[in-house]
Amino acid sequence: MTTGQGSAAEMPEGRAQALAAAEARCLRAGAQLTELRRQVLALVLEAEQPLGAYALLDKLKAQRPGAAPPTVYRALDFLLEHGLIHKVERLNAFVGCAEATHDHGRAHDHPHQFLICGDCGATVEISDTAVAHALADAAARVGFRVGNATVEVEGRCAACTAQVPERA
Amino acid sequence: MTTGQGSAAEMPEGRAQALAAAEARCLRAGAQLTELRRQVLALVLEAEQPLGAYALLDKLKAQRPGAAPPTVYRALDFLLEHGLIHKVERLNAFVGCAEATHDHGRAHDHPHQFLICGDCGATVEISDTAVAHALADAAARVGFRVGNATVEVEGRCAACTAQVPERA
DNA sequence: CCAGCCTGTGTTATATAGTAACCGAACCAG
DNA sequence: CTGGTTCGGTTACTATATAACACAGGCTGG
Ligand SMILES: [Zn+2]
Ligand SMILES: [Zn+2]
Ligand SMILES: [Zn+2]
Ligand SMILES: [Zn+2]
Image 1 (cartoon, chains in turn purple, green, yellow, cyan):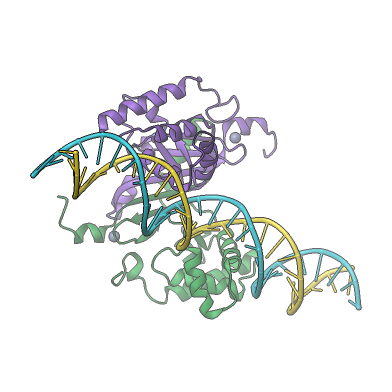
Image 2 (cartoon, rainbow over the protein chains, first blue to last red):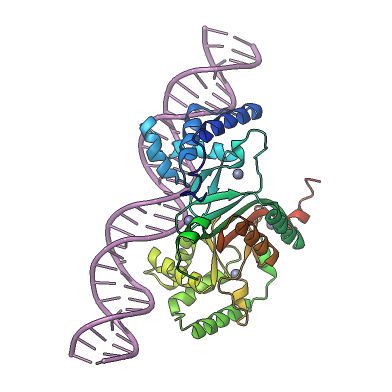
């Protein structure tokens, strides 16, 4: 962060690493990371911001002219199921899972939260266990058993806060 | 949906009370709770579960035959701006704000979280400050200034957990 | 070998969610 | 009576997501 947007500062080979990790993970899970699914994952990963399904579709058409909405939605469903990407509900958009970059961690269903800068659009994924615990506690207090949690915070990122002198 | 879950136990006059509180709050804010907006608010409040905009539109048409999407979306925008309802992003649906029922509390922009039962659909709003604090802390750790937070947990409510013997 | 099944994808059509733009009525201030 | 402002009706459209059917390839059991 800081330099520019979101993950702009990541090393360029981060994508290749992420793809390799995804491959390894699918292998272990007995899931097929097909060409189409790999293409969609690559498109999601190379974007610096969350991309909508139709934006992905447009990009995908360059490689796969016949692509249609179901093409990309089915690939996204697969990637979501296997924890390789997340959906940002507030944006109806998709991002690569930050934890999935490393093969070692089991990124499936890991607790995660998004910080979305309303200024520059940068969206970063964090994995704060204190938040997850607070949430689980609050839920338990009313007898609710927690499954999957969507936590998305709109606000202003460090870079944009520093950049703008306004608003003391 | 059976007798419904979640807020089924609320007193029936809760709606009238909520409407009165809304009225009072708009008065103080200098906002006009018009007939249309009151109708939409009433529809949201009398539903036991979050309602989508088009579901609301269908119901609204009974009272207002000419209603169209902008009709309901404009009303929803007003109600959202004034903190009388919330949007559940995961469901693309709207619910009355639990805090707004009481005129005293300043329910505008209050921290809130939703617990959504995947079984019966019951959606309850809680306002846990520990969650809000944990979130603010985690964000501050990366220099992010928190604005509005979306926290929506899918899981199983107490009633459904009790009802189903399975899954020891 | 050939059915029969399963998975993945292509293809068409449709459902659901949300907005833009223009209009006129009602209200109020000058 | 103007001229702004707010509200809502109306039309048309964009954006997001899914249903349903079709087909091709890789298996598997006969
Ligand atoms: Zn993740
Ligand atoms: Zn920013
Ligand atoms: Zn609320
Ligand atoms: Zn339930």
